[in-house]
Length: 508
Image (cartoon, rainbow, N blue to C red):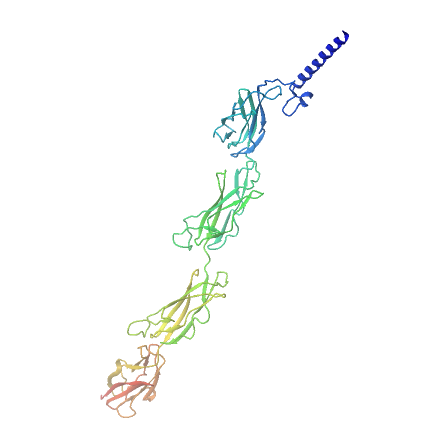
């Protein structure tokens, strides 16, 4: 009997001990609980065979931070559980869980619903998660709740402005100038900062070169506007900020029109752009001057000995290579012009009165050969170049040809009393074959050696004079001798048919 009693007492003690251990395992954080498996399974003897969920727990995604208007990196995760720590045995698939973010202020939007709320169903394990939660544009910390029939939990989230552009500032120089058609000294540069004053790395900055219709004097084509372009020829460029939050544009060059205009730099999230004041300044004019003699002469119908040559320099005196120089042969109505009324002039090879040439490394341009026309006289040739505010002048002279004809003046037939001076001087005009008056020609006037006649000063019956610039030779005064009668005085030029003056000495 005693043996039976001890066996019964032993059995009762073992059952009591097992019950105590099972109760201890049900207490969260207890040693027995810590010894339980990952699922909370402490053995069939400690967990009930039917264990439905009675609470909602956080499984991931809290706390976390995202930039404004960007998605949170991790999904929000929950799970259905029982407070006894044992596995759920009830079917929980499709249990609705509603996630809710604040309706105003700092909040977020669920991508699946496009609003601040979203309801999802749990999977077979009683878990649910939400992807694509995007922070709005308001900074701050807030909670997103997840609620179901088994309770509610809250996720801690923060919308941060860190790393989001808040300001864009132009860096020096904020104003600069360049001569038209030349490069600006420096590119444009800006610094982008976030709301905390920290540099924003990797922000895309768009630089835009504006223009204005207020073209300055001497700038470009009429009606054009001052502006510039980047190295690729466009007026807009996009660059990325570096580790210091700085973005720098490509190089830029002024266009051909002078005037002031504004360039801007913009970045996403910032309304007010950075501005730069730019000024296209008119170029200082080049100079163009003759090289060698600026005066030359040639006989009509022949080539001038030298061509026209000019040198083009910048305002600072440097030679300009590759400049186009336009040579123009003018004409001037001159005394001694042809019967057709044309003036003296010339033509370049090919018959044109205008020709172009390009300056070489020393800034020198040379015209084609020049042929004098058939009209004698003086005229001016010019040379001009784009960008020069003046022209180079050349003074040319078409000399008359050789004497061809002589013509007497109004005194060709006249009379006077013996011993008196003839009233009209004896004059001859010398012309070449084209009717040009020939200057500096020696004309000899000869009277009869005896009988009716007369003499020039000093008792001479023969005198030689030169034609003036108009081709006219005027003899000295001629006085009749004391013998009455008619006679001839001849005017001669070598190689030309002479001209006679018919004179009469009348008796007193």
